[in-house]
Image (cartoon, rainbow, N blue to C red; front, side, top):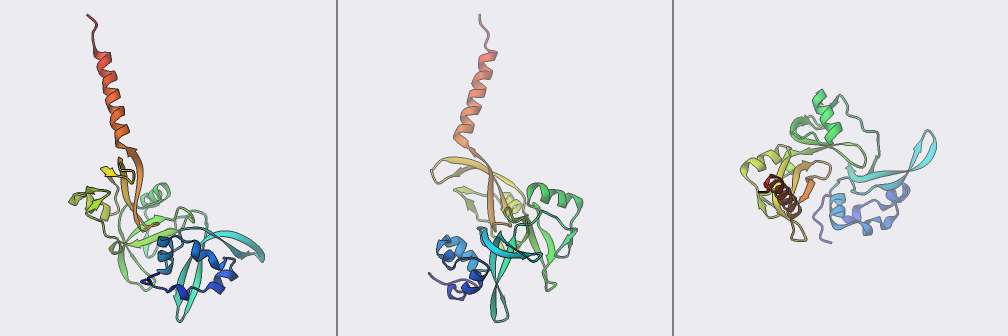
Length: 225
């Protein structure tokens, strides 16, 4: 495997992973993208069952894992499933009631806000909720580039700007893997660090339904002489 990641494969602390209950062969079971993301320090896509001690009791709980360097040591960070909770403030930003409601409902803030990292450096971020762990996920706006074309459809300047701002964009005429045309709602999702597609519609089926509805309407309006 070509190494162009933050951590090298041989740097993964397998002994520490085994200590928390993850078998050393888990890497060989990762898909290529998941492994690349993991070696770049991002949370794993999958949930792994790990050892945990809560109130002096031993448990096996599902959690995401990631790598983090502290000095010369590479550690394993655990991200267990937690209760969905939107705090009053996060990374220096005080959430308004409307923002809290939006996060709880859509699991995506739908806009870009300025926040500061642990070093006090300010930057613009997207905010989302991890669908598996319920964690708040920040993603720097500058780390996402909206392509000029998505699934064969060229985006207008207005559509690119809306996506870049974290807003939803409806796009029609896209081509799927099966060469069928479809439409969907697009939005940058911090939890997957990419554009998420929702509200899929097969355009041929949608067109047929529209034509059938129109035919039915025309039939009702016909007069018998």
